[in-house]
Length: 554
Image (cartoon, rainbow, N blue to C red):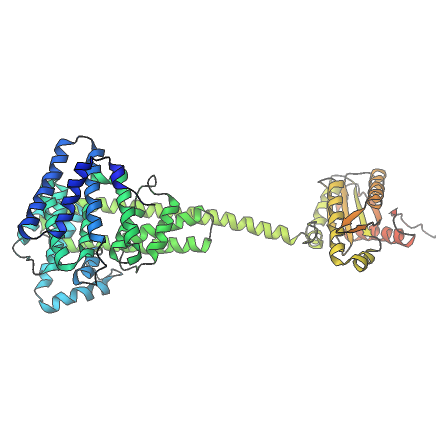
């Protein structure tokens, strides 16, 4: 989706025209013309801040400016890899610490400068210190150090000069000196545009956009980022990664979880070295929660949490490294003040660690519950016949003996009924095995609806079924079986174009041990029912026979 910033802003056409003219003039003018444009932009922003009390109207005017500026910068062809582009990647990983996962790459980039002038190492150390002061919020120390470095950093050292000016911008942004911070960034951005190209200038404009609190609290921020991301996403470079992450970091009210997951997938296609440990931790932590919440791939959710944990560990290492760096390079007074700011960062990171651990445990618990349900389901399936859905012989062997013994302890009679389809082989031979399977399934449904839920129906063999009925007297049971036999005989089974009729033979054994559960002999009871079934078949089939104990010849 592409947003129409002009239509959203409701800024007057005359004001829009002037704002867009100034934005374009920034990157097309030179010398005095550009300086005048910079002053005009500063004056315009100041005028809007002083005259517009409505934050939305102020955000709208600023959004129009950024929309026009981005249009000028992204319209140019993608720049070739320049010196400053690689240095900007370092900015996302400062300070340079040996335990950083990006230490080797950072050192390789910096070595280009240090080989030319070894004295730059000390200057870079002080610039890192300035950067850290601004990052943790020790603005007093940062401002003091920035003043000291003013004469030591020159424009010929473009990378170090850019880092210095970015730090100054952060200082004046913190103390809310609007005029100075805008002048700093506009002069730096236009200089970088002329010497290093549009991509690097776009990077700096993006940092300025991120510092606009009045804009970040409005819908314009998402609109600007979304439009910009659509345009630069195919480039798969530093800017697309940073802008994509800014979109990902928006509040859930502005960016749905599904959209965030889509951005996560995009950002994982970048080299991980572009994003820092905190950013990668946030991405993987979200992915772990998202996948877990959707009950999707358990393995992927665990892997995301593991990656999150790895980068969270690197965040702790970085924070410890920052503390050591400040202690080594700061004077005691500034370090003492900085410790107070570091404590806030420790507390925030501790909170993130707690959230991550809780989410990980909840994910494991939810998935273990899911796994246990699957195991139960698999166990249940292993005790059921695949064709008919009835209990199978394995169920009988594992469970039936205990159930029957319990019934006898309660002095409840138990009846065993063996049911066999007469001449079932003829059905398979005349109509095919698929028709035979259909008959088995239909008869299984009939048995399931005929008997009570407390009764147990087992597919005992190919076309044999065992029905175990509890707490029923022999007379009632015999009538139930006779009714079943008659209903099956009268029913016509329609399979495709065939009409099939079958009959069943039933052998019945009714048992009662009067509470003597130790005498339970399940195999013997089933054998009695089977004997009765044999008698039913031997005497002409389609009959119900109740087992009778043989008379003693003696």
